[in-house]
Image 1 (cartoon, rainbow, N blue to C red):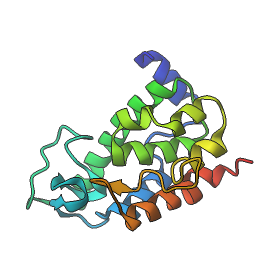
Image 2: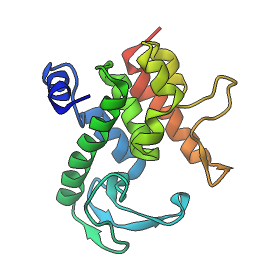
Image 3: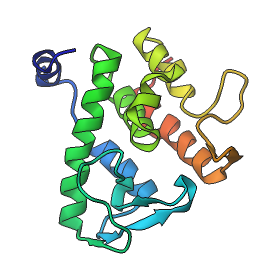
Length: 177
């Protein structure tokens, strides 16, 4: 999808990049509302992580363990990085999904990377217009097992809680039957 088409999709007014519900969700799960020191995230094998879950995988801004980021820097880098991640996600979806579904998929892309999110079953079902299934797959596989809830091969309850919250309170907030 080219930049002109993406601009027309976004400009249509019914899709908001870096929406407030998405930013609130990231702040809830990643922290950074008041600024914070960059830390080595144990769940991500020591990956330097800043406020709102910002890593080298979502920004060109250097993320250096121990460096303190002000609230202003956290918000500025987050907003720029979200637009970058969401543009890639929109590219792979190929059309404008409902805002809540886009936010749910964006949260997944933010956390696991847009390439993995684009290859996910959630994105495949969103492309088919089956938004309820797309959202459900953010938290559970078809067999009911936790989805996207493992780090280094081990189940992590906190990740599972986040995936369920993403499904229930972000993605499914559009009430898809």
